[in-house]
Image (tube, rainbow, N blue to C red; front, side, top):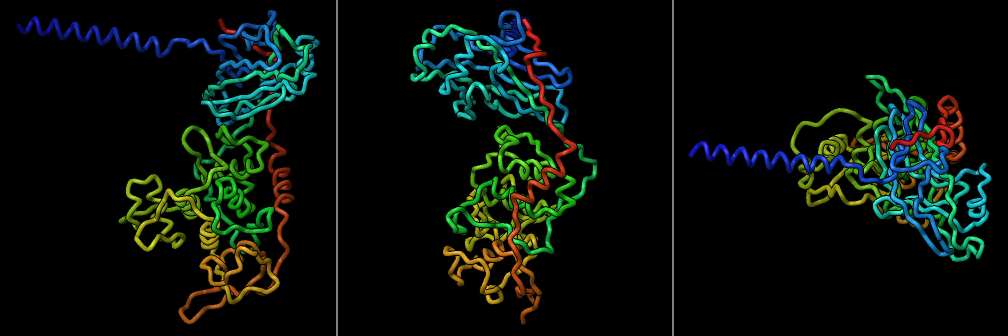
Amino acid sequence: MKSNKFKILTALVLAAAIIAGIFAINAFADDGVPTVTFDYGQKKFIFKNVSPYGGSSYPDLFTDLKGLMPGDTKTQKIKVTANGLGNGTANMYLKVDKESENADYLELLANEGVYLTVSSGGKEIATGDLYNGVNLGKLSNNDTLELEVAFNIPITAGNRLQDFNGTVDWVFTAEYIPGMIIPINPPTPELEKGDHYAYIIGRDDGLVHPEDEITRAEVATIFFRLLTEDTRNYYWSQSNPYSDVSESDWFNNAVSTLTNAGVLYGRPGNVFDPNAPITRAEFAAIAIRFFGGEYEGADQFSDISGHWANNEINRAYVNELVNGYPDGTFKPDNNITSAEAMTIINRVLERKPDKDNLLDEMVKWEDNSNTEAWYYANVQEATNSHNFELDTDENGDEYEIWTELRPVRDWAALEKTWSDTNSADNPGEVISSDKNAVFEK
């Protein structure tokens, strides 16, 4: 009887092994999707599941690009990968060869309505014309982007593009951005606390919107402006691991530098989500990273147990940077308001505004005119550059007495100076597939 059980058990094990083997084969089977790999070590583009066009170095990417009529759209799934990048990154682009004399698609280039749209997971991430190309995304070492590229010929293209049968010479370009080498014991990032210059300049409508939400990109920009010169120079970077922050974005220098400094982190999926509102937990975590240290003890709020920012929230509270709500909660996943953010930043900077000791000629805001609002003085502190003296009240608490207003900083000009100074020795290297493509069978 035992022998029969053993035989049955052996058979089940073998069956399971065979099934597992089948699943393993399927898991590693080539799905046939055209794939381009940028190998920075070899300075090569390696194409798989793509044939060269006419034996050249150009990939025949859109294999169904036959018989197209004005108004048609063809979509091709592709994968883009990179290796040999080290701690650098690569911005990947797709365009057509501008130098070719191939009449088939020179006709396309001459038509302004023909364009490419790139999507990932059903979400459009970029669009562009054929001549200038389209940004496929940013890759770190061994990343893979799964994309859908749509080739669009508008209904207005005209009769000359009817029944289009040409093969387009597609060129992939990689801009390699070297990463920054950080020593084993890097210095703790520091903020400028001595000069009380304005770090908020209001919005285009002339208001400051204290009760509105504030985005992750805006927060990154504020802290970037407040860095000491030594910290900014030390951690300067224009490269980051996020697929949704490119070098041309207005917030790239801020996001890249603060990520390099270990102050900012992304969200799941290799994204930074720059235009999303920032949560109270995320903001507290950023603020406390300028202080260092750890926390040991009971939770200070009733709703942060098991939260990813539990330690940071507790540390921010004991360092008197954040407060909770009357019911004992912190509401970590609620979006923070601009007024709350300015209040915390002022605490981080050790600024101590007092509503009765400001200056009448200061910049004032129609939507911050209520002097009894809990955030009134903090908003004025954040939006006015000034000199000050410190005094002490009857309880021994310090407060500022403003003595003189100072000019508002030209942040755009300053950032250009920082960029010119810090980026001169760290240029990106652009490599194109039209001269160094390899096709794998």
